[in-house]
Length: 186
Image (cartoon, rainbow, N blue to C red):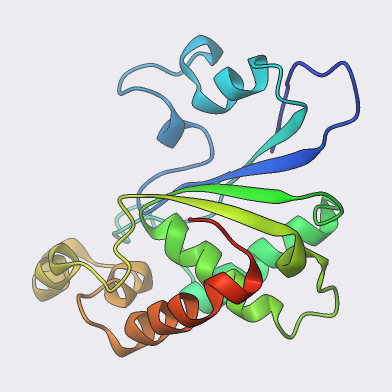
């Protein structure tokens, strides 16, 4: 979703917020118990005179299937993010991502996938990523939740977040080896 922002001129960059496990495009960026625009981080940023366009990407990131969720694997979520960025015509200006938790893994996977995407502009225009509480090599909490999975009905998202999972270790290694050559500040 596009966030209204104060702009007197054409934006010079795009900032995309990406939530994590159990969050969504709005509630993740609010203080607990508040949902108004006065307490919405992306709106705060949009009120600053930065000449940037603000976006917030939402995807199904529930940890359990109690609500009959259809959580998707990280690779598929990354393909959706890449398609969404392309459909919003992002990638023509510098891009900065602000991510929380699994959102950071999603952006890294999206960049990895973008190497073979028909439109290389998203990969080339990504200039920065802010990682907030991102479990780069997984989370022991995900292991615990998955161990009691019969009770919690864990989703594929939780299963993929297990500590030291080969998939996340490989993704983390790819990112560390390529971030400098891609010109991405973290």
